[in-house]
Image (cartoon, rainbow, N blue to C red; front, side, top):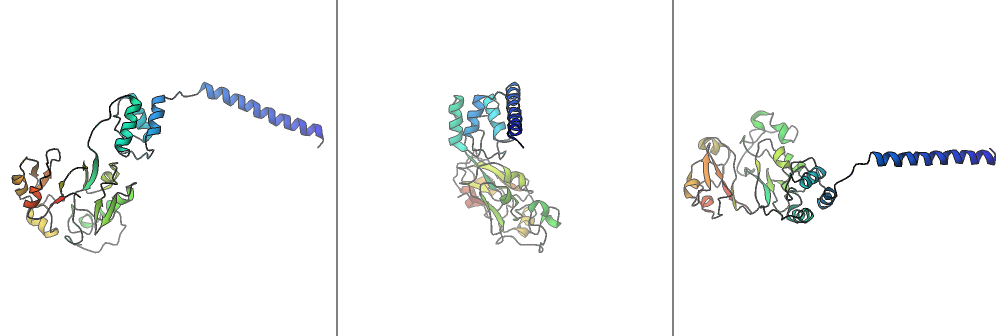
Length: 266
């Protein structure tokens, strides 16, 4: 190939590249999507986990909602107070002063107080175990199955299976709600970080049936309800419930419970 041919080839390739660049620039300007500066700033302030715990499809969607005024500046459960304050400054508003919420497992039916009805050899997944007899091998059909599906979905290492039952580390929990959605027995709920006492049971059977399957299950006797000085406890369907907004953390209910079904949250 002579020099002239090389020059022509280089010119054609170079010219083609220039033309493509021009066309891309023109079309890029024509179809450019203008972004909202507020959204961009909020996205920068968010942690970027895209966990969905806020109820939106990731951080970008939450940022759009906050910028539009349809979501609170404290909408990110993962970022907590520091992120809420940063976003509040961006939006020029006051940060919400809501209580920090954390996940709580309403079961303490570990291997010391419950037993297995049979040996389970299937897939170690709580949702799969719901399809086997008694919803898993444990004696209590309502309790923690203990295969750790909630552990698998937690991105923050906030849940561990200890002695056959799920336990939440409230200092690591970000209240993303993924564990709540994963638990087939609906044992996990959000409670205030500052909560002092909670009912460690979800068994709604009558007392004699509960005592057959768990040593510390709630028997619905109502003694805790009568003992509470502020009316924070009610017994419904043979199971005690604590209204955390009313609870003053005096601990009288826990001391009165004959089965130890009300525990102090550490």
